[in-house]
Length: 168
Image 1 (cartoon, rainbow, N blue to C red):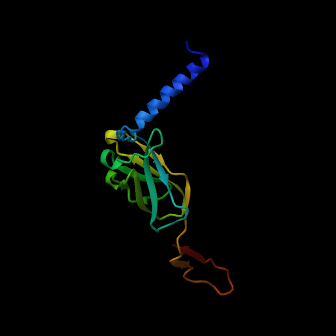
Image 2 (image 1 turned 180 degrees about the horizontal axis):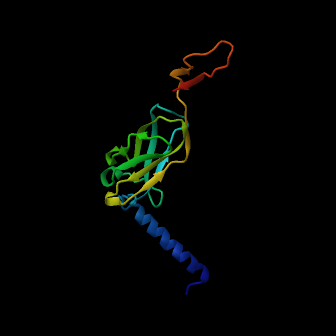
Image 3 (image 1 turned 135 degrees about the vertical axis):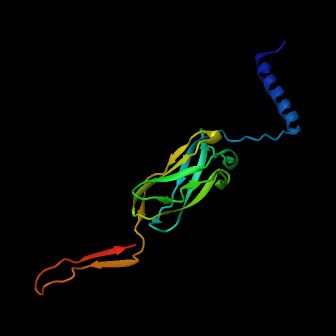
């Protein structure tokens, strides 16, 4: 006949012997891969200057936030655009540009203003994806030229207008 205290110890003893016997067994390798691409994340540098190249990171993640490390093999290319007055170059990022789910994209934007980068996938086997960066500011570039516009003629002692423009 078993008492209640022995009944409580019995499952612990069985568990202990099971753990000891499993520790000598060889565990099979288990590879877990990410799910289907579900979102695109931009990372932009803190300082961007108009007309100068800058590197932004484009990252593809599944619905659980895991990086899709094999996007280069199963994804589609992205069209790159900007929410702003100008255009960004280059306009596409190929799937083969992604290394372990991340593409370092060298871009150029020529206008000093607040912008957002936009990436839209071209469809393909993973469906359409779109990602927007957080808004960031492209600051004016270095002054390369000063343009002065004055009238062709003026009368001594009379006011006249002169325009001075600094250009980057």
